[in-house]
Image (cartoon, rainbow over all chains, first blue to last red; front, side):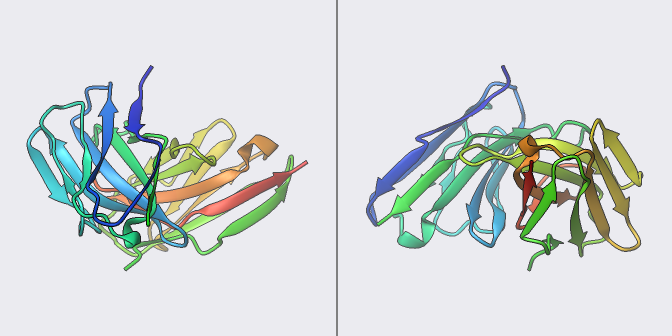
Length: 114
Length: 112
């Protein structure tokens, strides 16, 4: 079954304590991306990766890091989380450029930074 | 700057009737448009898409219409069913699929 898997699904932590949200896809997609969803703002892209070792900033990259060492994994790293990063995060993967090959999303990670 | 706008935060429709969800965009470079559906506690799931070279795409009960001159697209659901109750996101991209720009979503409630 085609899947994008995020872990953890829920996390409550404190300001400044480094955390990593993992994302893994089993569809051999080249493109992966992270979004955050906030009330009244929809989904906004944080970072994306076109392939292994190729990453770039999205619309709201401040306070986040990513890495793409393997094709299937694209972790999101918060080195020093702050309360304004409390949000619902989605990882997605896809093969853009091919019609009818839309991005697939994980089920989300709800982060609360106290 | 929101390049994709869904101006109706919510919509309520009776079962069996037509649901029409609207979306406007400002970037004339967008060439690929998608609708995603999202249930609580789940990620968005792809519903239907349309390329800018078309003005209509149908998939079962779902039809997306694109009016490029007005920079407007709409999703029609006919007939609406209670299971269609969800948040619907409109998204657009350049280069047919990279970097999706999302609207804020419209919450659809289909009542029996």
